[in-house]
Image (cartoon, rainbow over the protein chains, first blue to last red):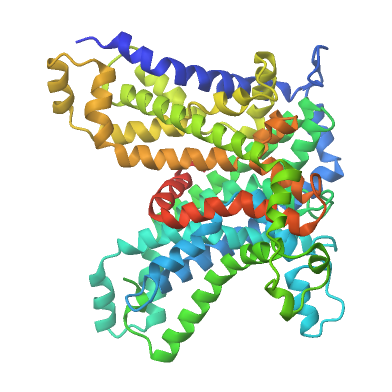
Amino acid sequence: MNHNASAYRLIAFPLAVLMVFTLVPTVLGMGLSVFEWGGGADAPRYVGLAHFRAMAGDETMRHALVNTLGYVALSVPPTILLAFLLAVAVDADWFVGKAVVRATIFMPTIVSIVAIGFVWRWVLDDQAGLLNWGLRAVGVADPPNWLIDGRWPMAWIILVAVWRGVGFCLVLYLAALSSINRNLYEAAAIDGASRSQILRFITWPSVRPMTVFLVITSVIAALQVFDLVYIMTPGRENQYTTVLNLYLYRQFAEFANFGYAAAIGIVIFAITLVFTAVQLGWVRWRGGAA
Amino acid sequence: MSALNTRPPAAMRLAIHAVVYAAAATMLLPFLWMVATSLKTASAANQPPTLGTLIPTDPQWGNYAEAVRAAGLMQFYKMSIGVAVVTTLLAVAHNALAGYAFAKLRFAGKRILFGVTLATMMLPAQVFFIFAYVICSKLGYVDDFRGLVVPFLASGFGVFYMRQAITAVPNALIEAARLDGMTDGAIFWVIIRPIVWPAIAALGIFTFMNSWNSFFWPLIIIDSNENKTLPLAIAELAAGKYVQSWPVVMAAATILVVPLIVVFFLAQGAFIRGVALSGMKE
């Protein structure tokens, strides 16, 4: 039986969309990184690897890179560890209110990051914010202006990222925990293992595939951070808060340096690939050794 | 079932409950603070709060009317709902039909075309958004509803996900339907759709949330006020564009955020499944 015609009808439109808005733009974007172009009618000018060389001496680019890596390193591990511990507690037979807690902690995941950042800006407001009000109430005379002073804004961006990210990881950890074989715990308890030993030597290794999944996907997402920084830096990002995607956006939207923006995009992509490859390699190596 | 099932002593159980509930409370606190502020007078909101004014005694419901009027909120709502609903319906339909073709139909070039579809999942948005914008501008999609919808009507992830779900449907059912003379469209609608409905619902919620919360792309492609979606409106509210009075700004933010939170708590099981799906994508 030949179903050719019908199959092509079904896939034609989806493939056309992917082609026009993803595939072709990727190829052109890669190529654009060796051109200088403002997006206008004038023809792109070939500049070779000039954009990549320029990056080496670009101070904002260096800040963006350092801040992005710092954001990844300081937001991903706490999110995952906290989610694991919360999941273990919520999953226990004796825990009361499992469904309510799960839904409540998950709730910020469904609110747009822009709205999250906006609400936190108000909590952290220097004069009328909830936090500084509380600090003044307990006698801190001159609390920092959290969203302006030095490294505080990035610290809060990371904290809010952890706060928002924990619910998603919690839900996935709960799913992983529910599939652990109950007999393992009983056997360990009969052998006289303590609760912390069970947690460390049975529960944690049992959910390792989920942890690997969460680490890899969270690192990829964190390398692309944009919305939260954009919204939580009143006025504008500075050298302590700018990140790669934000710098790329400025080059594209404000300076119309399409070629340089494309080159930054390639650098972000390359970093993502390297991180993912290293993590997968590490997982394979550990898996073989363990 | 967990390590903590060997029942810890009562004091420890109590402490664990306290810590977990405190963590859950921090999820609600900022939103409650937002609602509380939205009901204050402008002067009360600008003063450092005191215990007495933490919960407004004389709620200013007028702030909500003012927010709707001054910030033109209904326009943003209409735009966001329109974009998210149209995108979700059309994208899920297209992805599911393509998934059906890749799962159950035979045609020349299938392996290559499916490989191409999968490959698009890994392509970097940071690189392709530039020419996606350029192409949209050639098509007249810039600052237009279509620019927010058309590029999202198919996704490598959606096709892949639906193909995996539909692969599990027994071939015998499809062959029997075909012998009865059903077309592929009819087979999809009558046989496949009911069986893979949970996958369709999960992809639908996932697609809706992605569209509803999307920020980067609308920021690039939308210029004029009447085409802005909610996240763009919130960003501009935060920058003090529409109104300067904090309580009115907070009333606007409440109107923009709280309905979704309410819907979430009513249908949280479906939401959690749908959004947990996004983990597979990133």
